[in-house]
Length: 316
Image (tube, rainbow, N blue to C red; front, side, top):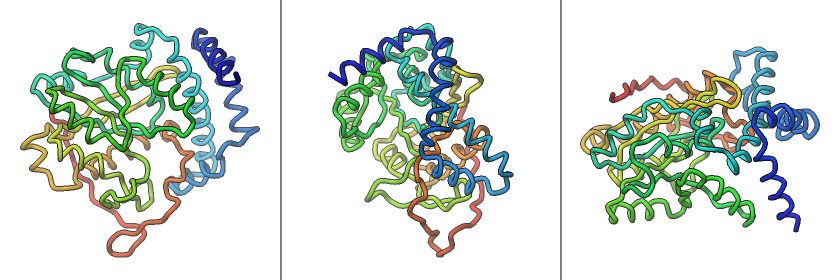
């Protein structure tokens, strides 16, 4: 009964315009989670302080407060997915470089898309509204997810994430799912949220990231190589409240091009690109996770060192 009432409430909220939801719901929600509940504020504050040691306390506090405002906006925007038109979504979530995705599809290539927890990642599956090829037209649009323990919440988010006819692939079976697509002569583009800690058993790649020695997720590159897929990066920004923009950058066209790139160079390039994205607007990244809970060391035993930049010019 409680879950039914909650779902009715969320559907009712989602029918209201965002112009109403921002001041009447998102702004009060910001004060609730930041000032009253103080949701993970200690973790957020520590992460920001360690990542930006040269910033003043006032500068770091401004990042922190903007982060919580963006976080509150994202909660409301995610609920809005229950009732938002394609036309409004296309006005609010725009893409640059769609022609690169279309080109790769025309060349018969499936695609790995590096993505991250830059807000609002839940709107990114609306790429299906922009490409020439659409779900059901010999192409599958997918995102990798970790199933939630609560069945109602898991079902609810799966429905939200399929709003634009994309598919959610469980992380545990994503390789088999993509292999099945290839056997069925289906092309695919699959988004991997690659900014969390690596899964147990993944090969280790440690790099300097946000002033921390960081073990990056390597499974994304490994899977792309095993399936000979093209690899792109989605660079997210927020031009204004309620409006987001993704610039698509090609890291590899796949095939011979990918095989010519040394192992872990794609992972390294992703880390550099993501770091640049975060530096541009730190308040958009999800700081509530304890990403550096377990310290890691570089192979030489040091906790930090400078790694030279690897320049990956966009292929187009």
